[in-house]
Length: 336
Image (cartoon, rainbow, N blue to C red):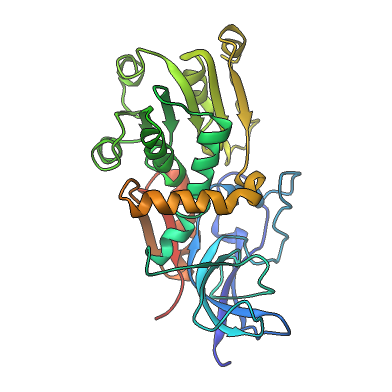
């Protein structure tokens, strides 16, 4: 197959916020399929906060990306060559081909998706890993129930936006935290949250009083830091705190800021539990079916923030940490 496969590889371990020199933009031959393999043309790459952790040489729930390796990332694309009977040319699939235009797989990590049911990019957004993260985090770890007040940080982001919508479906109140008036308006008026508070407002703490006057039964944390502490101080008895992420801490060059108000977990007989979506891999089918059903019934709204051009990966990736994106951040890498 003629042409080249443009790729971004990890060139150095970032210190603080990733910079251009931490990446190597290169190209290689487009791969060919061996026995039992398929070649996928990547259309969209998923950009997620977890990728920042994968860049560190530290023990975690998944091995770090090696120096000189293609940057790990979720992808969705089209099979263009197949020597695997489970896949045909033209099939659309999700996988983890990384930040590149073409990937090769033995098929074990691929999941077929239907572009006629939802836009292709939604399968790495609300109907993919972020949606599954919200679903299992809220329903299993958070044990949400009817009448609960659910507080979620990063409410306009990929996971947070789904958490609030699922909370409403489950009969709970959904209160979001987001940065800026426009995001808060979107969260309430388009996603259907009961309230959203702008954490950038100088009146942030007083603005919390009315929406959280009955306290917090479930806090779904995506940001960590000061926001986590503020939420811990407002827990109800037997509240559940779901630790999904801590994006405010990922680029720290100083020690991670831990919670000060953790003793309220003791006072309120509450619990705080961390999780990653890979804990639920055997239940992905269940979660995907439920998300798809809610989407087809019009109960879920999906939103992707799409930037184009693989060469723009470094600058687009940083939008995760500046809060520029509404909804799921996606990079379109295919050249039509």
